[in-house]
Amino acid sequence: MKLNRSEEQIQNFTFKFIFGLLVSLPLLAQTTIEMDEFNVAYFQYGEMKDTNPDIAREAARRAYEMGKDLFGAESERSAMLAVNYATLIANESDARSYLDEAVEIYQLVFGFDSEKMITPLIGLGLRLSKQGKSDLGVEYYSRALRLSERHLGSNSSKTGYIELELGALMLKDGRLNASWGHLQNAKHILSQYSDSGSKSGLTRTYLLIGEYYLARQDYRAAIEPLLISLKDFNSFPSANITVRNHVDLIKAYENLNESVNATFHCLAIGATRRLAKEENLKPVFRVPTLGTVGENFLSGVKVHFTVNHEGYAVDPVISEDLGNNKLNGELINTIKQFRFAPRFLEGKAVDSPGQYFEF
Image (cartoon, rainbow, N blue to C red; front, side, top):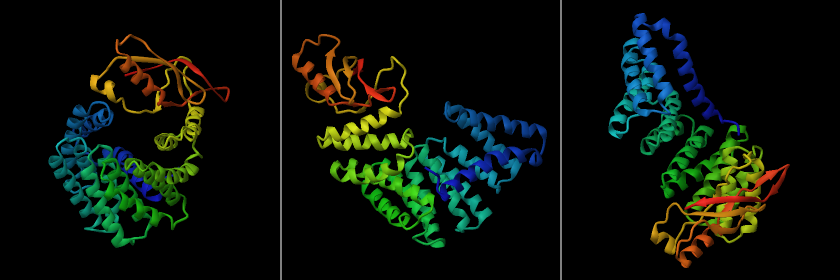
């Protein structure tokens, strides 16, 4: 799906900072030594932020402190460096102080509560939500929403985009009632626009509405919005979000005991996958182990089976004698309720013997 205008602005904002910063650094350096030290810290942060957060956090702190001296405490670059450091701080109150500092700098640069503040606030919300700091993410998205409503109107496409992001973040955080209001607002607003960005946002809104109903275990209500979103996502059959949409529908249909309808979506996922010859298939739908299995906290027990061409587990066999027929039966019954995306060869779904699942 194409990015909408707000998403593009956020990406451009980040892109211009990262690359513009590096291009312009030599012009702003007070000394070559200071510049070299800053570069070392900044690049170490960039290389480690996804793999070693402890090293990245210390590098981000050094880059932030040196950056303030190099660029000035009221520079937009210093604000971004403060954000880099804050998003790696585990303690929320400590992180907030650096984020508030960044916002203060942006306000000096763009003007207090100006329209230009909307994009950096959205950027903060986005980065914080990706870092798992949902409360802070909601806070900055909410500030962006208020500014967007004031400057652009409650029915502007950017307002709709922010409503969507707030709905998505709250849904992920399990705040279902709050999420529902934002998703309904996003649906109402974005449905009024015909540009590709708004259409993309509306498609994602339908997906999230479907997932809201799944979270409520209202599986029948989930199906319609999920089918609406799938119509657009099907243009990109192998995309992660399309697979996610199919998995959601499998969950809805299986919980309604409509396995035949779920099969279509198992096949759709399987048709897009490129699997190694001996690769073990993983379930796209699971049920919890209950009864005796749950009581005994089993681990390390393998069940072997064939995944047939419709994605069902057939002929399951337990690899070891558990000495408990009831336990054996519950494991076998559980695996039979799993669904898989079958393997495809030459465009046709085929059986896959020799599969296993370890409890």
